[in-house]
Length: 385
Image 1: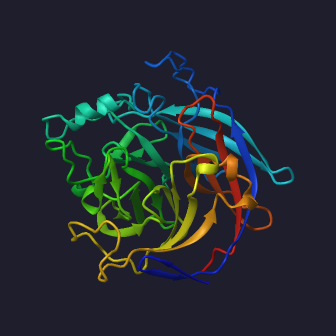
Image 2: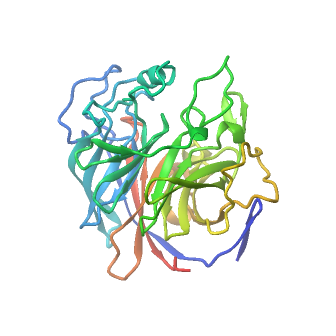
């Protein structure tokens, strides 16, 4: 079939996709940190939830689950963390058993806690010091590296860091200056990621030779600010080599002006899955989609200072994209009145006995006790070229 998205035309085979399992985790559940003291808003420090990323450990049924900045939308000093859990699929019932194993806290190279406080972030952002030591962190995506360390992206800096198994930062990528979050100049934002729209996803290719970081929405210089929102279609992605050097920037075009990205996951060296969604739940939800993109012919836009809000010039070719999974499709049973507002994370999991790959999706409940954390498992066949 032929699909057209902006200037990108795609001829794609149709893979076979089946939802084979799901689990809903109670919003009142505690994590394994053992730290139950109340935060500034009264919520417990050990509340489980807020999942922004998921990654398979490569062994058994063990997964890594990354929590974001905590309850209160950045208003508390939540100690950022990730969890190890077993997700055990029973294909005969379509149920996934969830067994939380450990919770590991994230820290700076010197051992200071990384916290989700927006106040701490604002102090760093407005500091007169050229390179202040930062402790504010809003984790969004996690990937396992070949040496068992973790690669984590963050919205605040935005930052891309390498974290050891204990949760301590061991290294940091140099994010291009044009992606940095900046304070407003006389109330006007002119450049960088927009507030709370930083690096939502990060992908590592199977060879480990390339990594792509994806912002939630276009950079300010590639969009327009309207009514407090950064509006545009052209998300500028930054591509790194295996030595953490930025080698190019490419464009991912959003499906519509009301959506943003949540995650990117490598399929092979050139193709990736991108999770794109709106901010609506239930029957108001319109966009909860996973797209398959191909970056082979995408233009390098590093030298282009500003991209237009919508239509790209003929000289710029974005990543080609085609619809892979529509999470609102009635065949899966997780749309309609059941549609979760925030599907946030993607990862591959252990293969099934019939040879199919498994694709896992985690949803963020924003640490709201009344909202369950949901995790889905899809069986995928026919994704080869």
